[in-house]
Length: 266
Figure 1 (cartoon, rainbow, N blue to C red):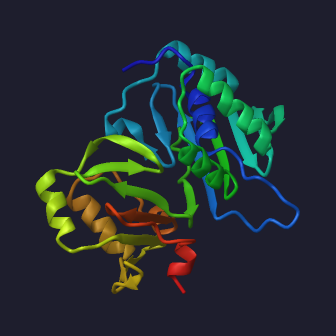
Figure 2 (figure 1 turned 45 degrees about the vertical axis):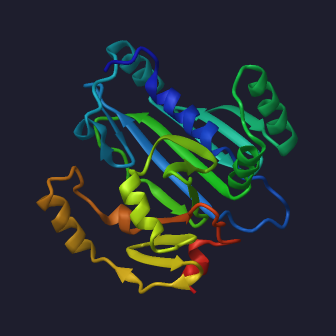
């Protein structure tokens, strides 16, 4: 499907809005989450994100007019670090914005007036991500694939399951849930909480606070399987350099307090 807006700029600003910045303090520790994403758009109007060709995933061409506009900009970059948000185009600084907690609250209040409802729990969770994350997004016009994404998210993503299998991710309900028979099978184990960490090829899991055996995958075997299943992945190295965590709770359960992928590796 063709787009009539400059898709590169839109994606950059969308990522900026979702991840936001890390609130800076003089004695603040290094951020738990660091994400760097490279996006490219080529002459044919096709995009790659983080080294992944979206054409192979069924995403169509961008409108030629939008492609021309992006080509004229060449490169756009958004960096969110501390309370500072900076934007440059073609290596030229465009703007810097100070975004502290009080100004973010004002924006949240304005969003409410325009019909964007954010629960108190969701706002609190957004602030947690803001104060623990840095983001660097570069969007550029190039006929070369984008660079692999750098993902180090030691703060686990919260997933909650409702009584009937409803799924909520980071306090936001999804439009679908787990099929009832499958969910009933999961509930038979009596599990209240599970924390899983993908740490550079090693999977570490805790169930109700107790360790399961760790599993370490080999990049060569993983690459073989992607070819065997005809998946659109030609390089698994970025995946094996990533750190990701998920903290899932069942009905009546609670999330593991202060859990990080780092703590799971100790």
